[in-house]
Structures are given as structure tokens and as C-alpha cells.
Length: 473
Image (cartoon, rainbow, N blue to C red; front, side, top):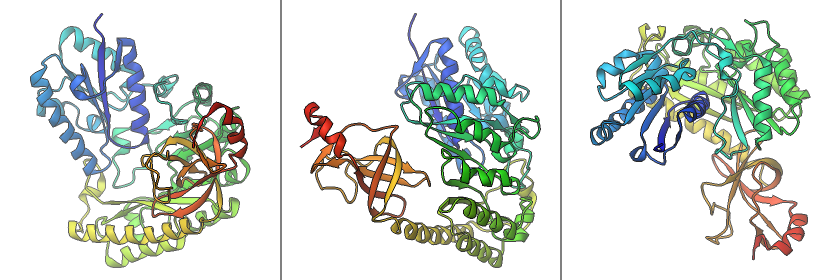
């Protein structure tokens, strides 16, 4: 049998990354291996996002590039999945005759059958049915070839909140939670394979289990916390209106739960929050942040901001800048508003010009960069515990020895700060791979988006490794 290769390209959020892992695993039953590039693939799949206009534009740009490959190789199979596929369905096939199939956000479990039918019949298929069962996710984790000590685990999908700017309820469906038994089985398998940190995923994890009368999200966290061998737990995303007192208290009592929460505020203006259908006020949001910091001193709070929402005045925007200062966020993700198909806000009056949106975007970024840098500078001279991810993208980062051969590593603190570091002891460099281990790092330099330092407490390892020569002189 001729070996077949599949190339999967992912655009979008952590949920899409997780889904791409499921896609790749599902193709194994058809004997597909991972292709190194599109040019060497027999099957190309694009997993898309439509939450922002820019992400959708990227998707269509990528699909346009696959047309050239199809002309060179008519047997090449090309498919598109994810949120754009769910939203547009058959329309994409009509626009792009070189595509073979479109599959929606709930069709991943049926993907192998779709591809098999195309291989045998050379037909074109659209599957955007939203009626599958959430627990079909069980057992479909990311490929074992991914050696990262951190993995995503979906605990629920869909959303019932219907924020006026968002299409998630329309392309991901309504909220549906996985049973804790399946979630814990998946996490235990990951830990047995070397994973040490899991990030629990959902459009709104705070409402986990409410519709199905399952344990609450805080109770689920307690069960995950008890998994032997797991070192850290993260989760995303939380809707402020559903942040319970039990979840707030969990940050103070669960030792594996990282001291970080991503709590999107979107705007600091009550008027705009109401137009967004967020169902909380700025004061309620700030009170929840304060309770989190009381329960877990030092917790890092990150957030999302949308600038240029229809009707946003200069006064509304100033209130957003004010809440960024008051909440003292550790970091934020900021987006310019864009109309999305099916979202009610597309029909609102008072659209903001692109020039004004960009100006506000840059103002928010500059303010938050100043706050983040100050927080990072406060850590210089301290020792922080990180989970080592592996090699840094920059092998000789700022603050390094100047030796171009020095190996630089990277990891994250419990508060989700990136730390790049070198490993030295006894005056020499240790090149042992500590991926998946917790290490103490002394911070020597603060940068706008990361920290730099040296691993501390490696002297005992240095003495033990001397005989093995597992270090660089």
C-alpha cells in the first residue's frame, strides 16, 4: 500500500488546535501520516476560525494557494473545516471548484468516512450537521509525536451567551459538556505519556455541567487536581457573569491550579457592555477581580478588549482605558471590532472608522505594554518556578553570555509569564533537557513580553552529570 500524507493547517484559537489534533488522529485509520509541507501532501485540510474578519481572510488566502497544487496534482484532496466551513457550508464549494469537501465544527468524528468516500468515489461532500454527541471527543487527543509537556483538553463546547458581536453560538452550537469520567480518562492518558500541564478548554468553562446536571466546574477542577503525576492546571475562557464563589475559592485551595485567570472584560463602558449583551457592569467586573486577588494574592489577571464597537464614543473609550488601569491587568489581547455574519451587532448603527479603530487599538496596546513591563521589572532579582517547555525560539536571548552556541530554554510561570533562560552551574553550561520539569529560575532581565534569567539550584545535577559529560565547558 502506498504511504499517504496529510497536511493540516490551523487558524484560530486553542479549541481549533485541539480539533486539529483530533483530525490528525482520525486520519490514522486511513493510514495517513503527517506531511512536511503542502507540496508533499496527498490530502490538505484547513481548520478555520471566523471569530474575527482577519482570521477569515487568512483562511480564504490559504485556500487560494491550494488551487495551484490542485492543478499540478488533480488527485490531491483538499478540504476545509472549522468555523468558516460551518458558517459558509456549500457556498465555499461553489466559490472554489478545486475543493473536495467542507466539514463543520461537529463533523470531525465523521471525517474519516468523508475522506474515504472521496477517495473511492471522487465526489464532493458538505457536512455541517450539528447533531453529534460531545462525548465522541473521548480518546481523541493530539498526536503522540507532539512532545510538549502541555496539552489542551476540551471539556465543553458551544455557547449560550449570544454576545451581540459573536458568532460562536451559530458555528459551534449551544453549550454541551463532556462527562467528567471521559475528561479524566483523557488527562490520565496524557499524563502517562509525559504531559505535565493541561489547559481545560471551553467557550465558557464557568458554566460547565450546568445543563447536564454534572459536577460544577470548581468540582471538576478538584477531580483533575487529584490526578497523580499532573503538575499544573490551566483553563480558558471564563465569562465574568458566571464566575462563581466556588471557582474563586478554588484558586486558594487547589495547589495544581495555576495562579492565572483569563477574564475577558471587552469594554470599560457600561453603555457599550449593554450593547454587547455581556450582562455585567464594570463595577461588577472589578469586584470579581478584587475577590480573586483576595482569594489568591499575586494571581495574574489577563483580559480581552474590543475597540471600535458600534456607537463607542471617546468617553466610552476613556472608560475602557480607565478599567485597564483599575484592574491592573497583567496582559491583554486587544482587537478591533469587525462585523461578523449572523452577529446582531452587524446591524447596529454608529460604525467607527478604521482609522479611529486603529488609533484606539494602538493607544490600548501602549498603555498595557507599560503596565506589563512594570510588572515584569518588579520580578528582576526574584526566583520564580517555571514548567520547562523546551528550547527557546531565540537560542541566544538578550542577557545571555554572548556565546552563540549557548542553548536557551523556555518555560512559563504559574502566572503565565514567558521565561527564557540558560542553565549553568559550577561556571559551565548544563545542556540536559528539563522539559516537563519544574525549575527555579532567577530573573535577571525584564522585557516587554517576557523575562530572562538563569536556572537556579542545578549544582547537584552538575556534580552528578560530571561523569556523563552532559554539559558544555
